[in-house]
Image (cartoon, rainbow, N blue to C red; front, side, top):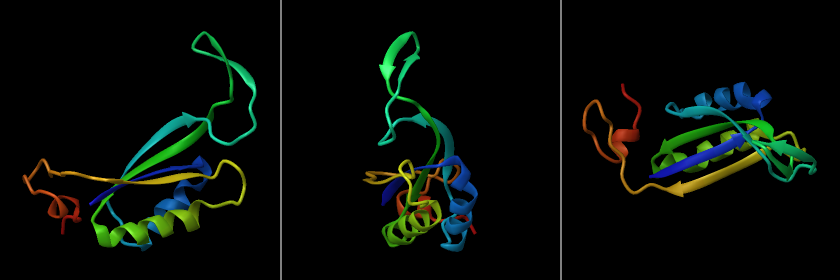
Length: 116
């Protein structure tokens, strides 16, 4: 099992969600975040401290998948989120040690499989 964490542009979220649906990836968590990556730097005050960066609005997707869904999930996000410009985001694929579905107590792959 893997946890896929993707940071994408807010304006690409609907396209990414449609691509994930077409790839039969159903469960995900979405959060609005701010961050700084490879974009041009600027000096700003953030929480009372002067810092040399500009924070950009992004969307963070977290998707727990079994091994067969890793490649289709990553490819769907890559295709839908790409503009070719700096700031398109990143995708991280992380190992997951254990997963439990709270409602049923199912574990591991059974816990990340969509409910029928």
